Length: 538
Ligand SMILES: NC(=O)C1=CN([C@@H]2O[C@H](COP(=O)(O)OP(=O)(O)OC[C@H]3O[C@@H](n4cnc5c(N)ncnc54)[C@H](OP(=O)(O)O)[C@@H]3O)[C@@H](O)[C@H]2O)[C@@H](O)CC1
Ligand SMILES: Nc1ncnc2c1ncn2[C@@H]1O[C@H](COP(=O)(O)OP(=O)(O)O)[C@@H](O)[C@H]1O
Ligand SMILES: [K+]
Image 1 (cartoon, rainbow, N blue to C red):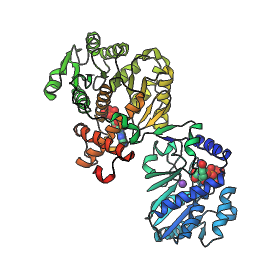
Image 2 (cartoon, protein in one colour):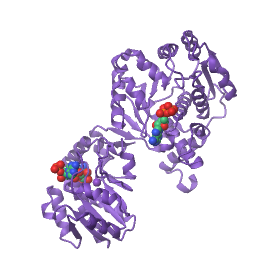
Image 3 (cartoon, helix red, strand yellow):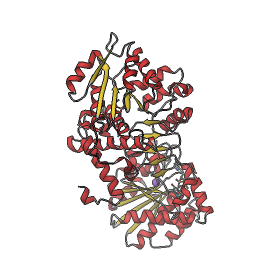
Image 4 (cartoon, protein in one colour):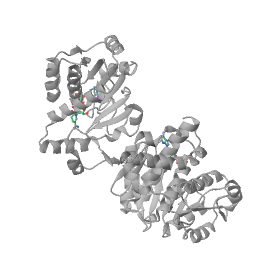
């Protein structure tokens, strides 16, 4: 796993590294070397380096110097003369670079800058880094749109200029990078809010050879899950299994209005490897589900007058649920009063439970001002996995706004910390999904935007249930197991986008590609571990 840091955590780490004997000036040299080597991988002939006033600019000045020594023609565009750069560290390297044979253009007009960029095949954006705040001021408010309208490839240093490195919110003017060369560790804003739209491909320069030894001395905002971390969940199917020993799932879901959600979740659980999946659905829609899913037994549960679970449902569902390895509750269920009772009944059972969709809305309604104020509602011994999207998560914490990765992590941590159990995981779904446990926040690989389609969450819930059931409780870290399920879901998105086209994917397409996605996750893990090469994985 690779740590993702907040800006404050990066500053703390920089200070620790300095105490260990590597100065900030040395780190800047290494940062410039990393930017230069990233640039050289494109074999550029003509490079424009745009530098700002601070140390982000300093990285750019160092990179310019190195590129020039590699026979690349470099033009540095600066808002001030090298002698006038306000940051002392950056001024030192700016003067040094100016003393070499590097062309420097100070304070160009919009047209002059555009003319320089037309001639270049690569631009390096070293205007603003982690020190950026507020709205972009002149001259950068002119430089950034000029750069975005120009044709060369763009490498951003540390963060795209104009992006807040903590919140991921882009200012009105923000560099749209092809590649971002970030320093020491990725910043959380690169994954949050607007970040993924502006970052392009992300590469990280560690800058300090003993980083592994010191990185745990600061907190981590989150950690990126790499394919190799998931290897424990990749196991061939033993020959001597039966359908029950493979893992059983009960999907408590559906209503007369939304029978499809129950169907998609159940079929996904089976495709994810559970040997026995059954659906408990209101009798108003049970026959419809039976006809659509011949391989899945459907248990009809008493309905209310509108086709949702009725008053008698709680007792019947809870009696059945005890026999399963995992219970998934929520997809298409509605928040009728019978559903609220089903949710509170299932929470009292000693069985691994996933609450999704309307089960989360029921849980929110069972509390008065957010579930974190009434932890006794969801405190339990057996594992509990909540899979809210941002709106559901906001409802769970009493309508506190949740609209990006940072606010989602904060809300999920409130839920976690109110209970403080290793067996509780909040999977905060979004363009970037955060898996929040009591101690750690994990970020698994994100899928394509094609996953933003109705029913995609039902498929994830089914994959999650199949994954939990097949693990049979033999789980060291529930967050990592959830990360595996999210990664499989992401790969169904990539496979479906390749098959049907990015914009044409619908949720049912994802289900039949779960098998392919399981294989893709395995291939990536094997590549990470050096067991498989790119060619063999084709
Ligand atoms: N972390 C590490 O270990 C390492 C970090 N390194 C590098 O240092 C970078 C951080 O450097 P930094 O702290 O000097 O900040 P930076 O991003 O250059 O910006 C500050 C300047 O921008 C200005 N400015 C701010 N807002 C503005 C606005 N809206 N519009 C216009 N201007 C604005 C601000 O002006 P002020 O607001 O102070 O008036 C100040 O002059 C980091 O991203 C990485 O690249 C590496 O060298 C080595 C290892
Ligand atoms: N822009 C996006 N990029 C990648 N994944 C996304 C994006 N938008 C949504 N997703 C993923 O798609 C799924 C949508 O879930 P959800 O909102 O519950 O859908 P539904 O309720 O329609 O089933 C989540 O797993 C989420 O992480
Ligand atoms: K930058």
